[in-house]
Image (cartoon, rainbow, N blue to C red; front, side, top):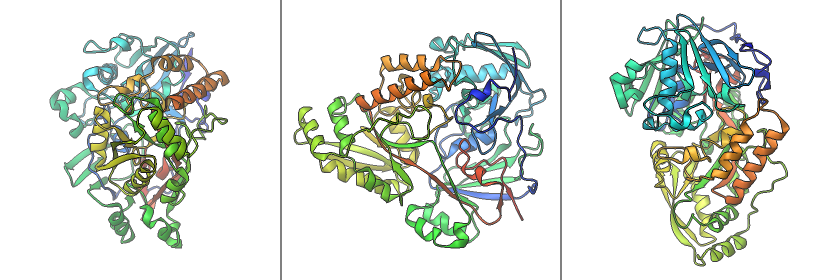
Length: 536
C-alpha cells in the first residue's frame, strides 16, 4: 500500500509532535551573513558512518541527508531524500522513491545506487561504524561485508527496495539517522580513510575549510534541494576554545553560540543578568549520564563489584555540581521516555552495603582502577565527586582527564576500565526505548570502536530486544512492557551506574534569529544550522 510520509502509519511513532510534509520557517528569516560557533575540542571526523559525538552530530546532519528527516526542532519524521515509500502488507518490504535532481556537492546527481552503496558501507564490518547495529533488521545484515546487504536492491535509478528480516518498529527512524546518510562512492574511494576530513554529501552546507586544531568553515550549498534554505552564507566552528573564554567572547559579540553550552561555574551569574538570561534557551532532552564498567576486565567482571559502584554514588550531591540542572537517574532510560520502568527504584545510596558487596566479591580492601573523563567543565569536577564516593568504599580511582575524542577512543577500544559519560552522555537519536539499548548496551555495540563501553553483551537480552522491536505498532503497551523488563534486567547485571538525566541550556547572541526550538533541537544537537539566521 502507498504511504506518503505524513501518513497515519508514521503517526504510530512515539512521543512526537504532529507530523508534517514540510516546515514553515520564520517569515522574518533573512538570507546571508556568517556566524561563529565555538568548541573546546577538535572534531574527529565528519564521516556520517563514523561520527557519533556531541560536536560532529549536527555538523554531519548539515552536510549529509538520508532517506528520512525530521521536522526542525522536533522528532517528527518528514520526507528526506525519499519523496514517498511503499510498505508491503507484511511490514517487511519498504520501497523508497527518491527525489529527482538531487546533487552531491561534487555536482553529480544522486541515485538509488548511492543509497545502496551507503547502506552497504555502514554495515560492512571493515568500516567499523558505531552505528552498524541500528541496521540489524535489514535482511542479510548478519552476513554484511564487501558484497553488501542482500536485503537492499536497486529497482531503477530513483527507486530502492529494502527488505527486512522481521518487522521493525523503529526502521523509519533509523533511516533518518546520520548513519543512514547517502554518500558518493567516488569520493569515499578518492579519500579513503580521510573521507571524514573531505566529506561530500547532499546537505545544506559543504565543507569549505578545515584547519586542524583551529577551525572548520561551512559554506552554503547553493544548489540545495530544499528551497529557501539554508539562510547563512557561512558557519565558522572555532575549536580549542575553553567554555569560559567562549562565554566571554559571546558577551563581547565575537561568538554567536558557545557549542559546549554555558559553563556551570558561570550559570548563576548568567541567569542573574536579565539581558543574558533572555537569550538562554532551555529544552528537555532524552538524556542519561552514566558510568560504564568494562565487564570483560577484572574486577568489573564480577556483578557484585558493579552493584557496589552503583550503591556508592551520592547522586543528589553530584546533581548540585551542575546547579541542579538534572534529576538523579535510576535506570538507563530517562523518565520521559516511553518504556521507562516507573516502579523500579534502582540502587539506593548505601556505602556500607557497597562495602559488603565488595567483600563478598573478594575485595574486602577495595582495589585500584581508572576513571576516564572528558576534560571539559564540569566533567572533571563530577568525576572528582565520583572518585570521592568510590574512595569511601575502598575503590581508589585515578582520573584520566582527556579530550573527548581520546575518551571515546579508549571506551571503544575497551582499554578504559570505567568511563564517566559526561559531555558524551546518551541523548536519544530518536524517541524510542530501543535507542538506549542497541548501540550502548547491546552486543552489536560492544565490538571494537563501538559505543558500548562496558562491553556488556547479553545474548538473551539481545533476543528479547529483537522481539520487542518486532511489532508493527511501536506504542503497543506489550512492547513497552518488554522494554521496561529488559532495562530492569540490565540494572540487575549493572554494567552501568546511571547518574542523572540532564536538561539542555543554550545561549545565543542578540543577532541570532529562528525559533527557540532550533537551538535545543533534539536531533540536530546542539543547533539546527539549516534554519537559524541573522536578524540584522
